[in-house]
Structure formats: structure tokens, C-alpha cells
Amino acid sequence: MARGPRGKRRAPRHYYVAGQAGFDRLAETLAERGVDHLFLHWPGAEVAWPSGEEVVLLVADDGLPQAAALLGTTARSGDLRCTLYSVGGLPGSDRNKVAYLPVRRARELLAAARAQPAPRLASDAERLMALSVEAVYHLGLASGLASESAIGDGYMASPHASAIKALNARCGLWPPPIRLDLESLDGLLGEAGWAPLSDTVEKLSAVNPWLKLRLQVSTQDVAPGLAVYLIRERGLERLDGLREVLVRNGFDVLHEAPISGEQRDEVADLIRGGNWGRGPYPTSGGLPAYLLVTHDVYPDLSPSKASGASELVDNARVFTVKEQMRRLVNRGQPTSQHCNPVHSSDNAMQAVEYLGIVAPERVDEVVACARQRNAAFASPYPVLADLSKHARRAKVELIDFHGRWAICKTFRPGRERFLEREVKARELGSSLPEVSRILEIGSHYLVFEWYENSLPSILSPKPLFYPHGLLPIWAIERLRAIILHYRQLGYECIDFNPHNVIYDPCKGLKVIDFEFLQPGDQEQDTLKGNYAWYPVPDTFPGDIPPTTQRRPYLRRWLTYTGLPRFMCLYSFPRPVLVVVRRITLVAITLAGVRRMGWRKLRRMTGKSMPRAKPVQEVGRSGAGSLRSPQ
Image (cartoon, rainbow, N blue to C red; front, side, top):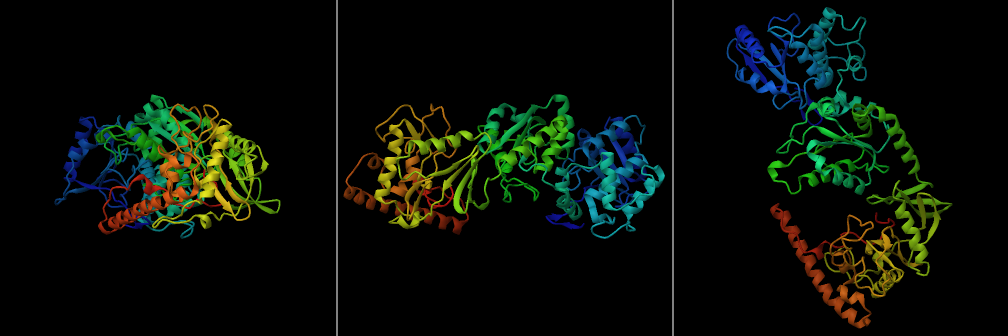
């Protein structure tokens, strides 16, 4: 078999029939037992099957066990070689890991064959369509058919070309003159409704280089950021939680609707190659039961490392969301009950295809909305560099602001409240020199003054095996004053941490992120209980970032201050703080040595080792950068 870009082409499994008498008994038995089936090829057929099979049998999924039991698995003298395909492409009866024929068309073939007496033999037109699907989508250039892009016009003298030409001459399905190259057949199959959807074509492109090239040419930016999530029956109970996962990762739901019981089978037949089995999970997630059409104005264009992600994925964040959804639904369930509760599109083009199947009347509206959102999220000034990190709420860019460098923060649609908090923080903190300055306020963006970041130059001393040193005591005192300033005005600096701090050699210490500044319970004159160093209460009604730690001071601040939280709450003499920091520095260094030891041991043994204490997880990246953490 020809080798594809990701491995060997997967050939169908062969069975054997005991000669003509065995074929006759097989045909009669299948009909007697009520197994839906159709012979695509049989002994003595006028046009030979190109790949040499003497019997090609298509059966319904529920009839696969009975059909397989009637066939032999080892060849004996006089046996006929048989290939067995199921409608849904079940394991052992698939072709290249997908259904041999488009599922809807395969069901139609079996439904039409029920009225036939045994043996149920396919017509010339049905055989023509099946062989054309095999040649174009399963084999590509390996079929011997020519390609306009690879070889030229016309067709080569191959068994597939000869069989397709002979069958068409017998049934007259495609009036002459016709071209029998791959591109022409692809067009004819598409017009007849026999071409698979792009999700199936993507899977087949792994073993069909011609298809891979075809996909790359046809893929276009319909509306970047569009994605469709099909929630399966097992995921319906956690639908609210699944929506929260989407919003938390920057997606907005443009349209949603349940998929009715009658429509579920139809959608399942057309999407995912008709295969909605359990996959690598112990149980199946069921049929598609709910539609979520989403949009992400800032897709993650980095290659997805998720299992099963294809090269045509246009937003790696989609796979991140799917993994989080799977964990949410399976959490608390016995391992034997785990399932895959969601299926998604891989790219915007595929999302439009899915939407066209489930809710065709909403396609134009959704695409127009996505394009409008993309236009509104465009940067208002020339971009010099993208400094965004996660960009869940806003993207951060270095821009040319009227001939000078500046930072532009463009907020996602629906996240305007975070913009308002940034503006409010500057109003309330106008007397604080450490609060970064806003140069321009737009409807969905803010332009900030740019500062050179030299924070690493003032972080000293530096514990061994840590990427950063300690903040100077004077800097800690100023950060204490900032938190206290806002508390005295009745506000809490939620999510405030050393990564929000930079140091400019000329303009000094600067705080650059106040997206989660929100009113607290009341005005406070003490640092005790502040939401930057203490956990945010569960009763807090406002926004809480997903990265908020249960012990924020220990995990985020300790390795930057070198002081226990108690000693940051009150004003202690600096000599006392210096002594305490020396002791803490030793403890942090020992923790770093322990962490490095575990890492080295893991590398040597290749085994997973227990994680170190929380303090060792702090400070994996430097606090200073041009970017503002999102």
C-alpha cells in the first residue's frame, strides 16, 4: 500500500467465502436473518472490482457481527476473497479508519435493497458511485487516476479508471464527454451528494496526499475564530458548566439550540464520518444533542499539541476547551463510565459546514456576526509587536502611537467591564506615581504609556535555582501602600501580583494591570484580609480570575518578598526585615535544590515523581516584561 504522510494506508480486513456455493448460502442466510446488506461486487459480475476482491459486502452496523460470523478468516483452496464494510465504519469494517461510503448514502443503498430477493446485488450506478468514492477519497493518486495538479489532463490506464469508465458506459449516469481525473470525479461526486464532509476528508488526507493538497487549496478564512461544539447526550447534564468553560477561555456563544431526537440521527450520519462510538473511552458519549456556535476574536494560531489535532486546525484553543469539557463531565464518574461528551469543528470552514447541517437558516447571520466582531477587534494603531499572553479578556500590543511607542490593550467584545476597571483604577490612583498612565481611551481599547522594563536589575538577592531574585524592601513598601490606598477607598486589588509590576530606570516602579479591581465589602484601613494576599471569599459577587490561588501570598508573593505575609501586613523596621529575608532566602534556596533534585531524578528514571511543596511553584517566569498579564 502507498505510504501517506502520517503512516501506512490502512487496508480493509479480508474475509473468505467458500466458493460459489458458499456465496449463494451467504446471500440467502443474510436475507433470511433480516440483516440489511448489499453486495457491491459478487462472483461473475460483468465489471471486475479493481482491487481484486471477488466479493464486496456492505452491511448495517447492527448486522456486522452476524455477517462476520458467516465468513471465514483464513483462505482455503477455492475460496473467494471478501471485503466486509459496515455503514458506520465500525472497527474491522472500515476503510482508512472511516466509513467506506458516506453514511447517509450507505443507509440509502441498504434501504433500497430491502425489497430485493437474494442475492441483493448493487446496480451499475450504485457500483459506479462506490468505486468513484474509493478512488477519489480513499486512494487518490494510488488509484491510477490522473490529477490536473500532479499529472495532467485525462486518465491513466488503471483498473479503477477502466472500471469506472465501463460502469458509466453501462448505466449512463454521467453523459459523455466526461473527464475521469480526480478533480472531475470529486466535482461529480459533490454534485450528487456523495462527497464526504471536510472533517472526514481531513482524516483521509493523512493517507491521501492528493486530498491533503486539495484541502490546503480549498480552505479559506470564512470567518476566522468560528467554532462549533456539538454536545453529545452524555454532556447535557453539565451544559451550564460547559458554557462557563467556553466563556472562561475567551469564546462567545453566537447561537445555541437543542438538536431534536429526530434530527440527531441525521446530524450523526453527516458529521464525524458517521462514527459516534466510544472511541478511546470506555463508553460512548451518545449522539449529538446540543449545538453551540461560538466565536473567538483572537484565535490561538500556534500548532495544537492535542491528540487528534490535524494540521488544518485554525485555533489551538478549541482543543484546550474540549479537554476541559471532557474533564468536567467525567469528573466524579467511575473510570468505567468515562466518555467523550463533545465533538467540535477543527476550523472555521468546517464550523460553517456543521452549522449548515444543523441550522442552515442561521449560516449567513452567524458568519456576518463573526466578521463584524473581527473587524471591531482590529487594532486601532500600527502594531509593532504582539505582547499578549493568554488574551482571555484582551490582547496587548506594542504600537506606533503618533510616532512614539505605546501599549494598546484591545478588549474582547463583552469584556468592556474590564476596560472600565482599568480606567477607574487610574482615577482612584491618580495620586500614586506607580500607577501606569493612560494616553487614550477608546470604545473597546486603551492606550497606555510604554515603559522600559528593567525589573530583573533590581531583584536581589537571587535564590539558587530560581529565575528571579527578591524585590527591594522599598518596592515592597510601595506595593503595600498601593494595596492599602485602594482598600481605603473601598476597592480590592484582586489578582494583583508581582507579574503586574515593572521597573523603568527613569520613571521608577509601575503597576500595569487593574482588570480585576472591584469594590470590596467596605472601606478598610488595614492590609489584613486584602484580596491580593488572601483568598477571595466564595461569597464575593464579582469577577474572580480562573488563575486565582487558594493561597495567593504563598504561591505568588513569597519568593518575591522573602517575607512571611504577617511581616508585610505591618510596618517593621528595615533591619528586622533584612534579617528575616536572609533566613527565608535559605529556605527558598533549599526548596529550589529539592525541586532540581526531583527533576534530575525524573530525567534519570523516566518516572513521575511527587511534586514539591507550593512554594516551589512560584516564580517560573520573570516579573518584568512589556506585556500585561491577561
